[in-house]
Image 1 (cartoon, one colour):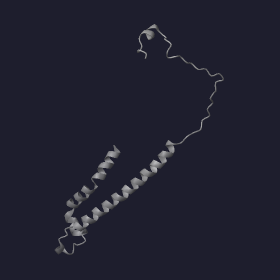
Image 2 (tube, rainbow, N blue to C red):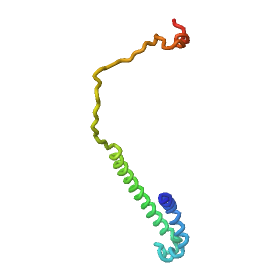
Image 3 (spheres, rainbow, N blue to C red):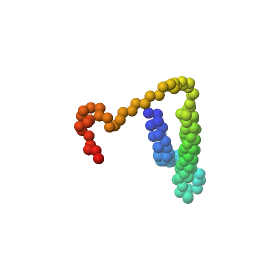
Length: 121
């Protein structure tokens, strides 16, 4: 559940920056805009929005790099656990007498086997 919430938050970061900009546009233009003293440029807070979007993308890229490094470290640690072998003592006995069981293919075991067979030759 928390992974789903985290994925939704990550997917909605940029739209939330736009929503914040639209909701606080008057305040941003009056107080936070770099060009608030030069209204002839008609910036209307777009400079602030561009700066916030650049910061957000930079944070996402750094988080993606951290996630990638974390996954690499996890894979290395996981392979150490996966390929950990423990030596076990095993005792095997070698039989002293070797016997071979051989039955000829030409010897009939049953009467039905003698009757029902492919024709020879």
